[in-house]
Image 1 (spheres, rainbow, N blue to C red):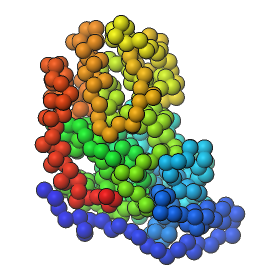
Image 2: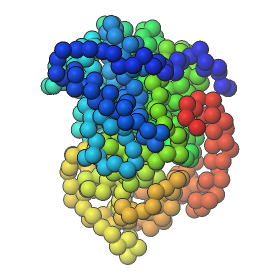
Image 3: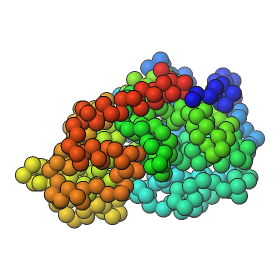
Image 4: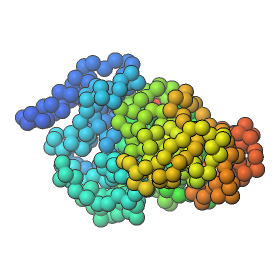
Length: 420
């Protein structure tokens, strides 16, 4: 049941202008970048929350600040638009920028893949010191998923600024949950710098059953939720999902000139195995293979753009690849083995989850009893999907079984939307 969120968050739209002055050349450069961006913005340009410095610098000034960030946490010199290629962007890292502006940044919290985004999926992220800023890095991935009271004791406010991809099993929203919960318990405000959802144009997939709750699925939502991370934070608060239904003091710095129907090409890959727009678009459909004996392309240059297995019939699949260790996949599934499957790198953008890849692979698999592993149910959020595939239920009928849950979710979701 929806709870009124008007008192739970403040949507900050402060227009005080950028008046911060500093004699250092580095500070002047950062401020000139912001001024350049503000002077050239048009209705067509998407401006991410981190670029709205006039909205959040007054909030952070004089505070002891913690930041949840990774390689995507940047301030753009020019606003992102779908027409630009990654090398066309000029940006500074958020942490570097705020340190240069003499804000009192105390520490960085690192989620899955680490602060600089190099760690494998599932690899333990360790506490460290950032070589550039000398700030302590506190891991909130691995054994320590929820910041402790000791890790928060010297902080007045925490900034969360990470690019998400809009899938339930992408763990940044789970880290957001635990951060909000810890901050609510410690009476520390959280400020989210919002960024577009590249899969924000559709909603699809089975609703997670809470009996299957895990770090790759913590809430009763579909696989593709169609929300930005700022909107999702509001839902976490509003639906009472934090322990004991505690509320986090939440501020969202919104994206300017954005709607969920706008195409958004990520200028920086959000994790090592999502290197392209195609991979990000296919991820909600192909990630199911992580719970099977089929590779989703880790250990190749086509991560989440190809799939295959030594156990798929080579007469049915002519495409093949051999996984080898690479960035983001030190120990890829089927390392050194020939995998037969499909190459989807030239596929058209999807506006729904495609189950036909999964159903076809199961149907053509040698040794079907070994196809699924225990991780599949965590990814799907329900045992029903595996049962349906094993029973030969069609994709159309599987999707029909999701309809009621999706309709209820869309009604709930509508209460938390910032962008239409």
